[in-house]
Length: 67
Image 1 (cartoon, rainbow, N blue to C red):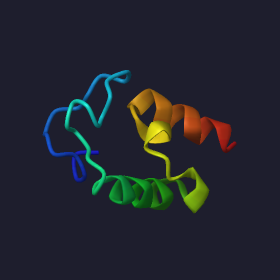
Image 2: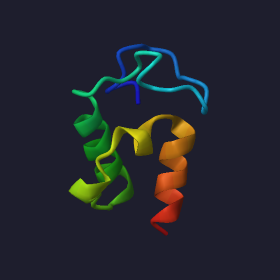
Image 3: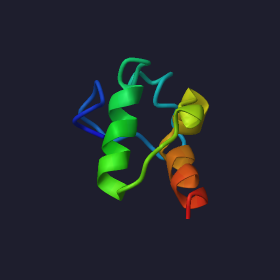
Image 4: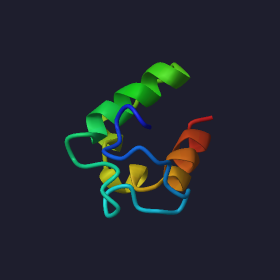
């Protein structure tokens, strides 16, 4: 997250990454790419919805739902 985030600290799990300015729309593809690399998965274009990656909690939920 720190490589992609605009801030150094780590946000609380339920904090909006976009509203708190940890992430912007330009950083979302970088975040998705990092997740794909880290977890050895492919995230389909249909899932590139900022709401799915709104917070650390939502990212964890998304990754858990993929199995």
